[in-house]
Figure (tube, rainbow, N blue to C red):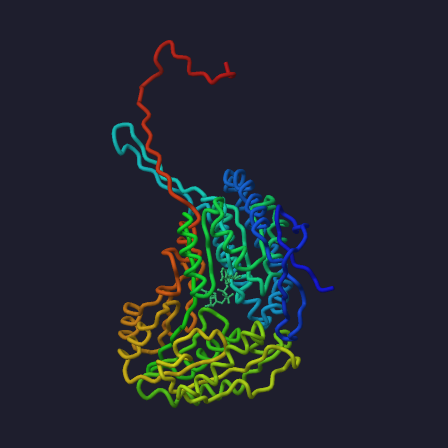
Length: 499
Ligand code: NAD
């Protein structure tokens, strides 16, 4: 019998029966390694009820206690990171280094949350009117649902949960049903750190669980990360039900290379940002925009580097692993035919290599297209796999117009040594995260992560000060205390019971 992965409710594994289950694969082996429970409406309700009960006391816990638990959580997570990385590689397929890297980025948000008492200080104005003072405070919002995608099983939950919890909320995490083990490990770390039962809950499931969370009257806030159609659905349904929602969607990130750029550096960046994690990153570079004469030199440098890439089982020291499921692998591979039919030049065909792994793994090697027509599906769709497309344009302005015409606006990068054009790019490009000679410009933890256009529904980005704002709501207290120089004679100012 395969392993069962169940929910985490009330500080322990759920003991109820599983009415529906999904299969969990090891993508490098192509075999089912576990079955994950898919929550019913009633199971979601039980989880939310536990989170709501826990919120009533957690919201009043002291900042000192919250900070202590966060520091302990950080220590435990660091201690267990190899175990967590192994679990990620076994279900997602990314190589162990990438899995360790996502935990490191998640830890940065935990560290930011450790200092949160400085962020929730509030404000005070003395004497706005005679004897009248104003105090601004920020309070937690309640039960926060966090719904995450398959591609960062630890990092994306860690973008949200430490900040929500540090702000005094309780969290119900609904991880991707394709990669459920990381959430379970995070739950164990929180419990070991002394977080009270119910403050962190995991509900495994699919659209049934998500839709119940979006309608549940006791869920106050929803943080979602996933594909654009689901992000739009989550935003519209959640806000219709009166919740605050931040829903981060898909992407099609462009990297523009000008002729004056360091071309070796740009080729290194394109290969690591295009094929790292098999292109299953929302900040992956999927379109390289070669300006003016730079195309041929870039293609030769990139193909040289691609020939040296090793892809295979993420536990064997390869550079790139398999795709997450067989269906996704087949969908990505279908774009290779679609690109050729649309007239693009297939310079490197990822179907032809030989992976270092078992035959049944979900393999597809890195592929490169040149002279990609912008009306083709390989240019327009988010492929979410190891397929890099080169589009050639005559000028910097053409490149900028191309990037800005994209319906997505997650990341955008420019490679150049020209300060003036770099400045224009960062000013005029319509994307939430911009890299200048940096291919994957993920903001550091004290800033906030989020795209524009179809890459984000809502107006609040993840983590950093925008995360703190999302997980708290403002309250302003206006108070008048008439001044008296001395107690009036005959008034008893002693406290009851203290003489
Ligand atoms: P997905 O949209 O299929 O799933 C995301 C979550 O939504 C999962 O928890 C899933 O169970 C749930 N879900 C799926 N279909 C649903 C439906 N019809 N109704 C309700 N809930 C549903 O995304 P994925 O395939 O897991 O992840 C890849 C996508 O996530 C890519 O598009 C990628 O760009 C995006 N992503 C974006 C960011 C970002 O920061 N913008 C970060 C990581 C991933």
